[in-house]
Length: 118
Image 1 (cartoon, helix red, strand yellow):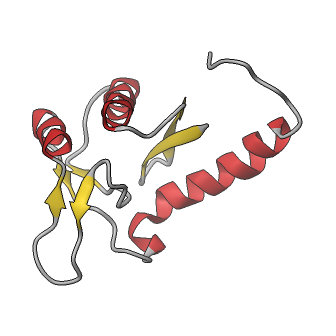
Image 2 (tube, helix red, strand yellow):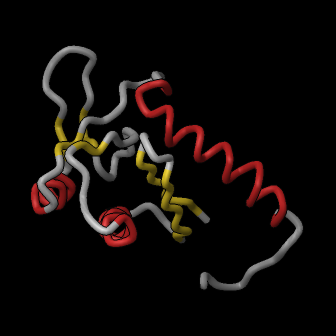
Image 3 (tube, helix red, strand yellow):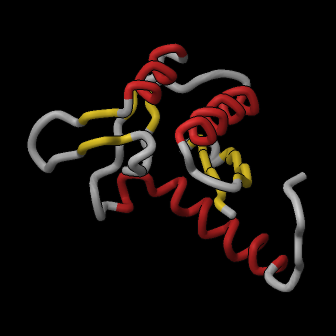
């Protein structure tokens, strides 16, 4: 089980969606669901460096995004700015949201058994 987590940094409004994998189509669908839940897009997406979205993120040089991810972001008029490797502060609001989800939701469900997603 994976959790896709998105957060609007100023309002701390969060979107969390459980998925069975983090393949490209799942990653893109989760973004679309997030934008629908938020009621629109954002000017910048600060993503993780997951290979599903970011092919190459050199220290110096141009970031290479997956074609489908770049096209999806373009469709929503959003720029993708992946957080730097090992720099959690680049995406602090979502890291904080992940911590809250882990401590307040996942911890309460740790002894439960589920056979499907809702």
